[in-house]
Length: 182
Image 1 (tube, one colour):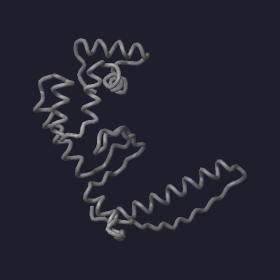
Image 2: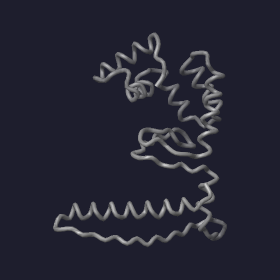
Image 3: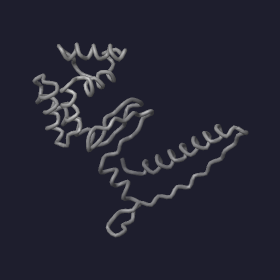
Image 4: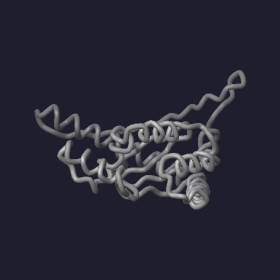
């Protein structure tokens, strides 16, 4: 997650030992940073839930939590990441990503996914919408045909139906998304 130096590193190692974990584990480091780092945890939580600009929040992170003297580099890095996130793109095959416009939200992807930019999402949502009293109402109709074969095992039959529906919805959505000029 980051560089751990001096007393903060000692505190992290002790925190990890107390919880029977390896201090090098990113999850342990994040848990320590959010819950085990005393007043610094409160600073980090305040910054993570902040509503200021990316530059202002990066500057606060650098000067108040990390305190390493690299404010300009952190602000520049945050602005670069912000510009990349705004355009959408592919997520990793699996793993965690940080998202959220009103504060950080941790998402775990089990398979690759595509994130659409705000402009593309708006286009997709308005493509088949109708206006009702100034508000947009989106109408989508999906016809899904599921053929299930199986014996007496209700749980297995249910899983088969769920898998088939998920696959068909995936085909429908991917087909629609592929029609957009991406």
